[in-house]
Image (cartoon, rainbow, N blue to C red; front, side, top):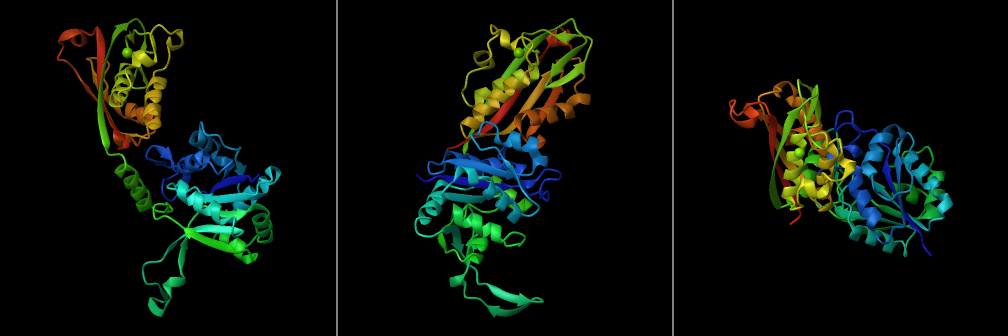
Length: 384
Ligand code: MG
C-alpha cells in the first residue's frame, strides 16, 4: 500500500508584504495564505497525511491558520528553504511513505488536477514537477545589452507541488545538505534522478509581491459573484452597572445594559445582519435565550459563528456597517477601537468595517436614555 505525504514549506520569515506578519500568514480572502493550499491537500483523496514545516516562532499564527484541519504536527524548519525541506523530509521517516509532495505555502491556488498529474507521473519517474511553457522570447543579457536569444522551446517554468519517491529524495537532500539549490527538482537532478514534467496551471502562481497578493484577491473575488446583503437590528435597556459592552469593546458608563448575554447590541445587530445575508436565521435560533450556556456570554462568539457559517459556504464578508443609536455613552472616542475589534473578530481588513453613531434628538426610548439600539448591514460574497 502506497503512502503519500504532502509537505508544505512555510518556515520563511519573509515580511516584505505585510509589515510584521510573515507572508504565509497574511490573509487572502479572509484566510491565511498557508491555509488555502492546506485545505486542498488535506481533502485530496490521493494524499494520506499533510505536514507543515514552520518556524516555531510563529506558533500562534500557525495554530490559528490551521485550526480545524487534520494535519500531522508541524516540524521546525531551518535557516534556508533547502534546510527546511530536508528537515521536513527527514521528519517523515517513521511513516515510511512511498512518495512525498513538496509544496510552497505561497502558492494558494493549488488544484486537485495538478496533484493528480504529479502523483500519476511518479509511476513513471522518481520525480515529477508541474511546469508551464515560456511564452515570451527569452534573452540572455549583461549590463542591459542582449547577448543571446535562448530557445524557449527548451525552457519551462517550474511550480510546486514537486513530487518524489521518498527514499530517493531523502538521500538526495541529505547529500545536498549545505548547498543552495533553487528547488527540490534541482536537488533530485543533482542526485541523477529523472524528473518528469507534467502540466502546471497558470492559476497556481507564487504570491511574492504586493501586486501578486492583489491579483490573488481579484482571482478569488471574481469567483464570488453572488453578492448578498443582510440587515440586523437590536435593542437593549439600560440597567444598573458601571460599564457596558458595545461592538466588542468595554466602555465605562453610568449604567450597564440588561440582557441574557453581555447585551452587546452592536455585535448582536451585526450577527443578525451576517446571518441574514446567507439566509441562516437569526441570533436567537443559533443561541437561544433559554440556553444557560449563553448567560453572560461574550457576544464575539455569536458573530464569529456567523462568520464561520459564511466561510463554510465558501464565501467572504466584503463589508460590514454598524450604526449605534443612543444619546450616551459618546461613541466617537471608542469608534476606532470598535472598528479594530470587529475586524479582529471577523478576520477582516479594518478598511472593510464601519462603525457610526447617531442620536434620535432626545426623542423616543433612546432619546430618554432608557436603552440603546443598533442596526447593521453586512455584505457577503458567495460562490456563484
Ligand atoms: Mg441582543
